[in-house]
Length: 209
Image (cartoon, rainbow, N blue to C red; front, side, top):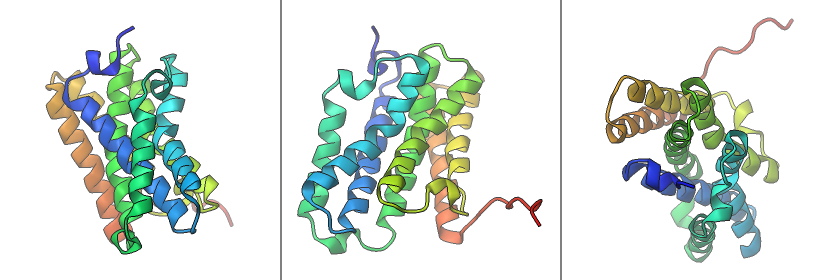
């Protein structure tokens, strides 16, 4: 069976690695901020890093990527060890949010690209990009007993949807995949960064009394 690196342009596996690493870092940081052990940091990093991709692969009927290939789990564990051995001051402030924003954009594009490459139609492929980008963060928040990213007021899922949908649209219009990936990931990151900086949010439901 073809692997993603065989059916996608050379740039897209790097997006996969970037998303995996920064999501793993966000998971490890969530555990580190609670004074957890190194084992817990590794567990959070792994679950956050591979969670979205695992659900995506199960939904589209593809082999679960980190079960068939050793490097994703190894990368997550390496990132956890890096967080463990570095000073806390390196990760203060909004580090978790910014790591998550980079991972969100990269993973949304990679998820959509992998789904398209395996024959998934455009609309479901874009949705698979959202699943890839968001599920890991949801699992991280559940494990850390924090309010889910889905319940936060600022734009989050919308940024993932922008990145994955823009990639699908650009590729459907004939744009080179590398260019489409760069533009889509950049747009998704820019929207998420703006949401972090200025607390941008969609209007809330007003039907309740």
